[in-house]
Image (cartoon, rainbow, N blue to C red; front, side, top):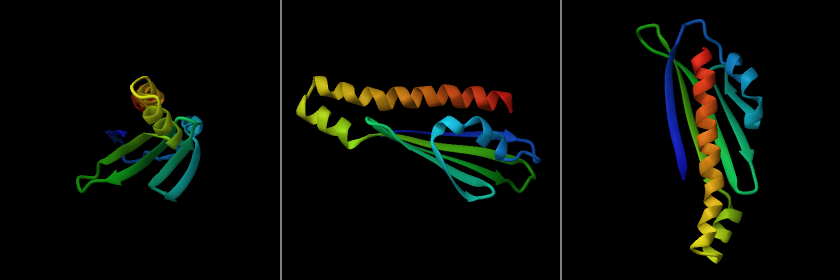
Length: 112
């Protein structure tokens, strides 16, 4: 429901381990390959999935791509439907988590 994408040019010697050491609070990591890993985390009101991938372009440059999803959990949907319209405030947890992640992402990418 609350999705985003970020792409940043990094030098060709960049390794994803740099991000992995700073992103320990994002949840459980699942390494797909050397150039891609996924963080997943579930909270009472939202489910989070963050995918970091490192792609090399034909020009020799490397791009760090980040895809993220913050979806309201089933509990949020139940509260939102049963207590409509006030219950829709349960979705604010996922929205705020997405905004917090975007702030975190920009601060981490600024340091690279």
